[in-house]
Length: 337
Image 1 (cartoon, rainbow, N blue to C red):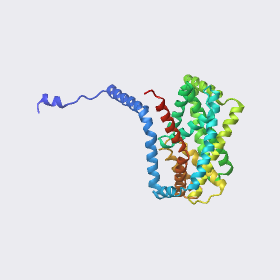
Image 2 (tube, one colour):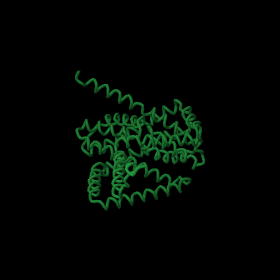
Image 3 (cartoon, rainbow, N blue to C red):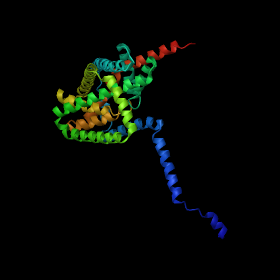
Image 4 (spheres, helix red, strand yellow):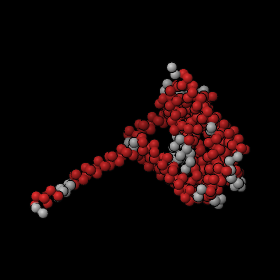
């Protein structure tokens, strides 16, 4: 081979600066992809599918089938009544916060919109899109989308905080089989709080953002009367969900004392609030399997009970579908031809 031909086959060795530049570009592209809306929209349902696949691999399909076949008319009727009560309580909580933030809403309207958001949360990936729709719809009606969105966020956070406090309190009192897990979870939460507080303290911009949001939170639920209403409404909503889960447990044929059933339900419901799911399915079944196994009842029974709960809960929020269709038809009718 001639010297000229060999020269054409030799490739220049990239310099350290070129390699560093390419690495930096690749990192920017990866960061941009991970931070994109499309990635965030897909990562939750994909994670939910993977989790469900793992659960099926671990316990098989039989518990899911058993849960589906355990749905009966009595369970559905009870779930419809309890869901109506919990929806009214949650809508009242939202109304209290929204009215204090200046985006007023009537209780009947709030109940209808809350039903619709629950239905959308149950059938759409992530479990949060119904709340996003509720915030935007209320913002359009009130003329203040940012404040309406803030009201929904505060309302949901307040409900979650009360649910966590109730769960931890009940577990500390009557959840002996979960004591080790509770301590571990509290340790993780405490570590996250410490790390987050350190980051906030180190950043002047984050301090300003947190101060602004805390001021809005104080405006939303700052008075003693508002706090009492929010707490009572949240406790009522949690109690109704616990009762629906207890009905599901009884429907699959698992005999559990009421107090123990309530403890288990609180743990499962807390896991169900993890926003990595497919219309509510995924983490709930995983946590239910683990919780029942820890309580000595078997993971298959937990998955079956969670399946029954998911089905009757979906039927219980079905009025939200009727409301969504009626509102969509009404809007189409109002459009000029």
